[in-house]
Amino acid sequence: MDFAVDPDLELITDAVGAVCARFDDDYWSACDAEHRFPWDFYEAMAAGGWVGIAIPEEYGGGGRGITEAATVLRTVAASGAAMNGCSAIHMTIFGLNPVVVFGNDQLKDAFLPRAAAGELHVAFGVTEPDAGTDTSRITTRATRDGDGWRISGRKIWTSKALESEVVLLLVRTGEADSGFDGLSLFLVDLDPDHVDIRPIPKAGRNAVASCEVFYDGLPVEGWRLVGEEGKGFRHILHGMNPERILLAGEGVGIGEAALRRATEYAKDREVFGRPIGANQAISHPLALARMQLRAAWLQTMEAAWRYDHGLDCGAEANSAKYLAAEACGHATDAAVQTHGGMGYATEYHVERYWREARIMRIAPVSQEMSLNYVAQQVLGLPRSY
Image (tube, rainbow, N blue to C red):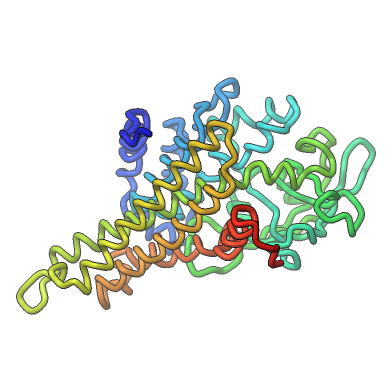
């Protein structure tokens, strides 16, 4: 067992950190307040090759694994970019994995090189208002139209739809009662003649909009089907564990940004003649935050290592996402509390971390569903839903 720091990961951290240093907290606060996509940041990350880090080399990507991708996203989040920065690049970094694994050659050749170069923006459409976590109830439908398809329906929480050219879309091709077996996956154009995109007002992470998307008879060529008809949910499942791992990396990074600011403030702020960090009521929550974040990162790295080595990682990935969300939530809350009243002000930025950290406990899978996985798949307890 070797816990030595990997030199390659150190190089990635340093290089990505150098890019992120050009975009300070004020930049991210402005993007959030103005609901402005961080184009300058995205283009800088694309120019460095970071958005294509996990796309195979044969398509112009870096050919690296989830371990490296999680390190990139942790570094971005820890810079102060938090979820706004990560969400700007997350889908390009790994969202096209089902296309890499299951897509036909025409799909790969058409889209992967452009994604690796940062030229193609991609969204992900699964969630529906009447389905939520129960994906088996999806009703957005693709019907046969000659050699192609027509798609109609409604999705919600499609992040980055406003900026994206294409969306990886899970729809029903089987009978209404076919459950998971009737779902298929397509990579489709967000054609404005057939697609209506409406941003959802939300509490945080407003530099990257989350959208309600309406599809009205969207024409889709037959070659846009990803993998096999009726196997779309299985294709999506292949990417769920790495998605949890990447989100865990983001959560750890947000917590680290909050902890850094809180620690600096606790050293500098004096009350009753001494720094507030001398008080255990301040120092202990911050010390606990450091322990929790470190534990979450170690679990994240184990999960990433297992995935990259072709080993089962369901328990580790769900555990990493759960632990990172909890650690992130504690760290950002402790940072606000450390700053007192100023923690609620935008000046010190910790309120933005706090708002964005809350997302981690909800998406892309709730804490409760991660616990359900471990309870049923690891402990062998009866299914609870």
